[in-house]
Length: 279
Image 1 (cartoon, rainbow, N blue to C red):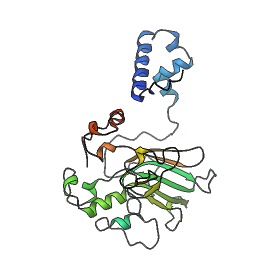
Image 2 (image 1 turned 60 degrees about the vertical axis):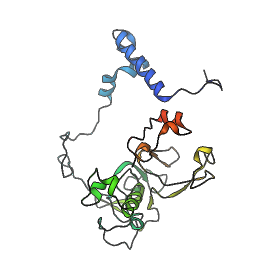
Image 3 (image 1 turned 45 degrees about the vertical axis):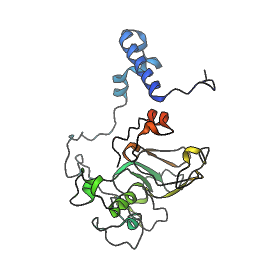
Image 4 (image 1 turned 90 degrees about the horizontal axis):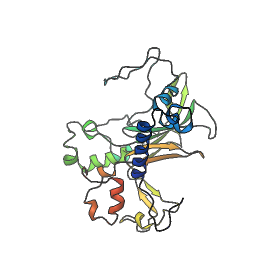
C-alpha cells in the first residue's frame, strides 16, 4: 500500500534493519521448517551458504595469497600489465610526467589519481567489442602523503599549499580514456577526441526535476542549474541506454560545521553526516 501524502517515506536504514530482523527471526524460529530447508524462492533468500556455493567463480586459476606487497601478484601462467596510471597523458604534446612538478592545469589533461569503479564501454558504440573501447574510471581521492614528498598523512590537512590543493582537486573526479588491444597489449590512444577528465572543479549542468531546486542553489550558482566538480567518486554503473553513472561518497570528509544547525539537519542525520573529519 502506498504512503499517504501526509506520511513520510520510510528511511532506508529502517527498511534494512526491519529486513535483517525478519531474516534473523526466520533463521532462528523456522530453521527446521520447509521455508528454509526447501527450495522455495523465500527459502533461497536466506540460505546464504547454498546460494554462495552456486555462485562460485568459474575462473580456473589458483587463488592468490592475501598479502600486501610492492609488486603486482599474478597467478601462474598469467601476467599483469599497466593500462593507465596517474599522470599518463590523455592528449598529445605533453612533456614526460614528473609527479613532483606537475601543475593543476596540466593534471587536467592527464589520467587521475587512486582508481575505484571502472566501466568498459565497447567501441564502436553499441557493439560487443572486447579489444577496443572506453575505460571510464573513478579517481576517488588523493593520498597527499604519497603524492607529495616529505608529507605525512597527519600533516596533509595542515601544511598543504594552495598549489598542492589545486593539484589534488585536478587529480580527483573521473577519467575517460580510449584504449585498444594490439599484439596482446593494451594501450591508451593519446590523441583520441574521446579522452576526457572530469575533475573536482569541472562545471556541470544540472538537468531533470532537480534542476533549480532550492537545495541545488549555492553561492556559486543561485539558479541551481549547475555544479562545480565531483569528488570522492566511489561506486558506479552502466545504464541500459549506454551511459555511465559515477557516484560520490564521503561528504563528511569534505565539509565541516555542525549539521544540527543546518536547515537540512533531518536529511543530514539520515545520511549519517557528522563532520568529524573535515578537510
